[in-house]
Image (tube, rainbow, N blue to C red; front, side, top):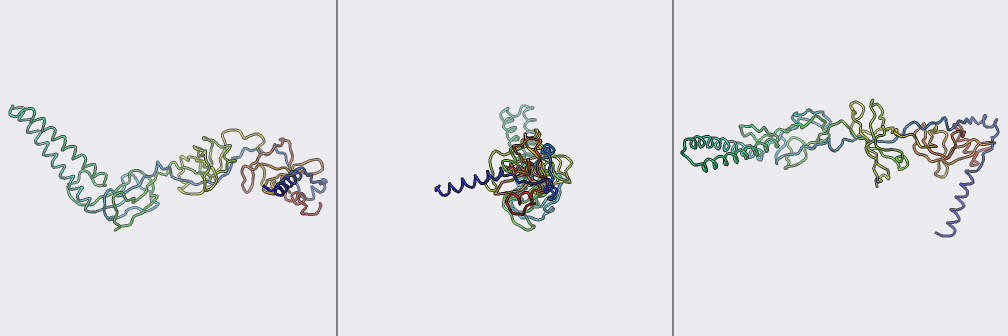
Length: 359
């Protein structure tokens, strides 16, 4: 860093320090004429929570993808994006040669299992009459178990493909059904479309509970912990913070705070953006205040308030934690009985910076 640049930075820092110590001298009649009103910090409790933007998302554990079990053609789609479905409700129909083969293999396996059962009953009778040896009966029993296992495998394959495991005809048609009560989050398939095995067709999700993914600056997240209440406009029951991420998000340079809302019905929809309020379960930090937004001014990237002093007002820098159109949450190294300007701050700023005439 050059000597000239260092001198410039030192001068700038000195100017800001002097500005903070500068007294804006005003007589009582000037204060009244300018409409400046002051209040005590102790009256500005920091009981309200921090307001932050959030998005409602469906937890990954509550999302399931419906995929094509085998290569097939989509014969029909019964549901569409956004529809509510019940467990067991038909979603779509598939048809194709692979489904025909699966049904044929299932029927063949069932026939072999029935034959093996008949052989076992016949050999049990022959063994009881002493006609055949024990080894012959043991072999027949083993063959029956193998045939039954193969039939069960083919029946389960039929069920996974969306076909009834007790089918007695070869139709080549499978009907995929909803595995749970939920909502269609995605529908990426059209009738007549040919799909390969494991091609995603639909995405279903359960809508209770929902997650709230909240973005916060590090200074805002510093007082938030799991268990804190999260109020959502229109929702009767608050959510609860479940996670405060330890690392920053590279893209937004913010911290992720996750909350769970157990009963979002009627007040929150998936992917909706909302403004939430987080109330800490712990008492607010000492010297933390929530002031009217009109009491703050900004100068050189810093937030300031004007503290009442003998003979006028003095600008004091504060640390801003949260801000809304009406209020601002901040910390300042000030006593609770300190009086400050809650109205007329812009007038005081103009006088402080020499932008207006004297009062």
